[in-house]
Image (cartoon, rainbow, N blue to C red):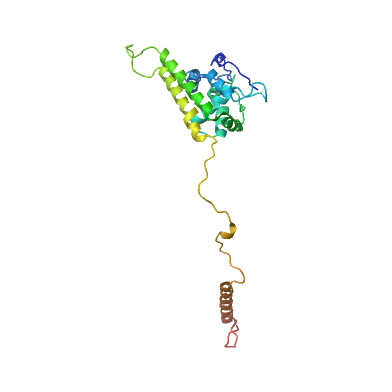
Length: 234
């Protein structure tokens, strides 16, 4: 079952934070959030879900945002959840209403998402993000002849952030997807063919070694006994 909230209603000013905590609008995750086409990404994600059956799903922005965070930071599922739980900027990025100390989902959710979505949905993500970047470029005013000082503007940084997001969602996902590698070669698992350095009582070499050690002990004890007989016992 699908639960969805229009992402255009989200803003940094509406994000609840503890007293004394103020989020920086220039933070990379805030800028990246502003340029992401969340509604288009949600449409692709919800194609894999039923609108009427099953338990209510997590909001699409939470799921998609977590996937982007995971591959942008190149961390495990467990570390992704911990990073989100500790970082208010990441919680804003995935669309939470305010900062919370509790993890918004379990790491196993990311495993289920990868199995459900497949490469086709990630390709649609890629296309939607690239389209959003191109639209930003088309709306960007010409700054080449404005006479200002050279440097990266906020618009430049926003476009860079969108480009950076497009790579983790697609290229890196294909390398970490749940495709099972093909088996190659042959591995023999048989304890009877493994070399074992175990000797048995019937081993003549073991019996001879025991005889030699016994004679050596007798020789040592005989020298210390000072017995009159000349012949050592055997």
